Amino acid sequence: MNKNNDNKIKLTFHPAEFGAKMPIPLAEQSVKAGFPSPAQDYMEGEIDLNDILVRHREATFYVRISGDSMQDAGILDGDLAVVDRQIEPSNGNFVIAFVDGEFTIKQFKMDESGTFGWLIPWNKNFSPIRVDETNRFMIWGVVTYVIHQIAE
Image 1 (cartoon, rainbow, N blue to C red):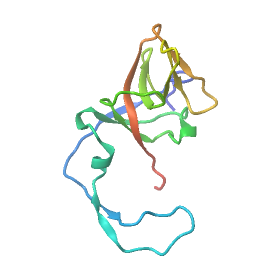
Image 2: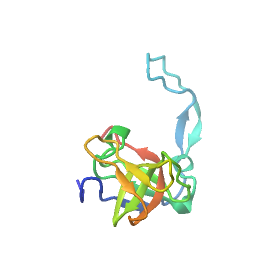
Image 3: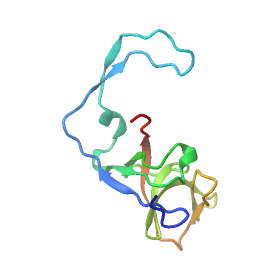
Image 4: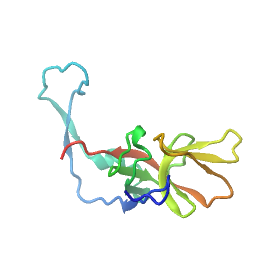
């Protein structure tokens, strides 16, 4: 794990690159997470994941996550976050933030007064980071999707 202190982690950034389309068959029916129903052999069409994951091509990056400060949000060490730098951050968004020389992924919450904000980890073993005019702080981008591998 590449922790530099309690809350800051090292992230690896990759620009979103687009080659030829790679359509994947899309099932016509949704898959139930409860009691299984008989399989259907009907396909609705095809999708390209770039069309779903990327809204602003020039402003989208993939970021490899390192660390466990967001594990309770389902964002795990080794996951790949899709980050859009063109989206205006809103209260409650998950963001990639730059704080005092370090990048981190956290949930952003603005204080009701509007004079400072909090970067909230989703792991009780980590403390929130207060950000205000005394910090070198910037929201680098908004996390729009997280890709988590569940099978080898």
